[in-house]
Amino acid sequence: DLPIALAAAALSRAGIGVVAAISGITYLALLRFYLPLPALAPHPEGDFQLHIIGMAIDFAIAALLLGVFVLLGALLGVLAPLFMATLDGAHRLVKRLPIGLPLKLALGGLVVGLISAAVPQVWGNGYSVVNDVLHSPWPLALVATVLIAKVFATAATTGSGAVGGVFTPTIFVGAMLGMLAGSIAHALWPGSSLPVVYAVIGMGAFLAATTHAPLMSFLIVFEMTLEYQLVPALMLACLAAYHVSRAIRPQSIYREALHGDIAAEARR
Image 1 (tube, rainbow, N blue to C red):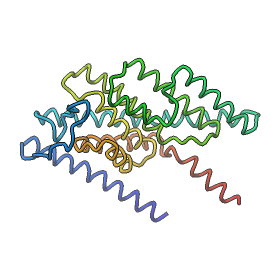
Image 2 (cartoon, one colour; image 1 turned 120 degrees about the vertical axis):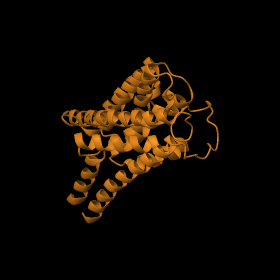
Image 3 (cartoon, one colour; image 1 turned 90 degrees about the horizontal axis):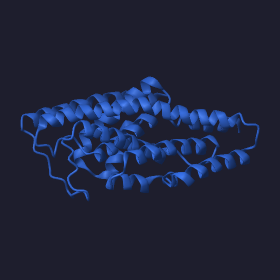
Image 4 (tube, rainbow, N blue to C red; image 1 turned 120 degrees about the horizontal axis):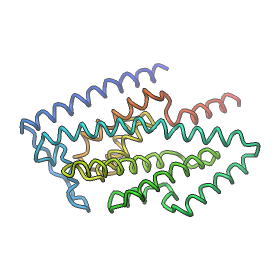
C-alpha cells in the first residue's frame, strides 16, 4: 500500500508541476521571450497548424487554444466513464446468459462479425485505421459510424470473455472522438488547429481518462507522433481528462481484470 500511496502523491505533485511549467512557458511566449526549437521533420500533410508553443505566430491564440484542449480533455474525461460502463454492462449481460464459455465466445464473435461486415474498420487493433484518420480526410458521418461500431464491437469482445484487450480500442475511440470534436471546433473557429490535432490530443486524453495513468498516456502518444509542439496541449488535456474521469468513476478500466486475477490467485 505504501508504494501506491507514494505514487498517488507523486502524481498529484507532478500534475501541479506540469500546469505550472506550461503556464510559465505560455507567459514567456506571450512576452516574446521564448523561441522553441523547430520541428525536426515536416508532417506528410504539411504544417499541423497547432498554434501552440513552437508554431504559433499569435501567442494569444496559443494560450486560448491551450484552454480549448483542456476543455477537450475534460469532455473526454466525462465520456470515458460512459465507455467503461458500456464495457461493464456488456460483461454483466453476457455473464447472466445460461450458456457455457465456448458459446459465449461464439456469440461475441458473431456480434463482432456482423458489425464488421457492415463496418470493416472495426477489425484488428485499430492502428491502421487511426493512422489513416490522421493522414487523410474522413467524412464526419463515417467517423461517427466507425466510432459507434468500434464501441459495440469492443463491448461484445470483452463482454464475451475473449482476450482482445482494451488498450488499442481506447486509443481508437479517443482518436475518433477527438476528430469529431476537432471538426466541430474547426468549423466554428476556422483559424484554430486542424481536426487531426484534436484527434492526436484525443488519443492521449481518452487513454488517460480510462487507465487513470496520465503520464503514461502522454508519453505513449508523444512517442507515436514525435511532435514536440504537441507537448503542452497533450499534457494539459491528459491531466484534465484524468481528474474529471476519476472524479466520476474512481476505478480505472483495468480494475475488474486486476481484481479478477487477484481473486483467482487467492483461490489457488
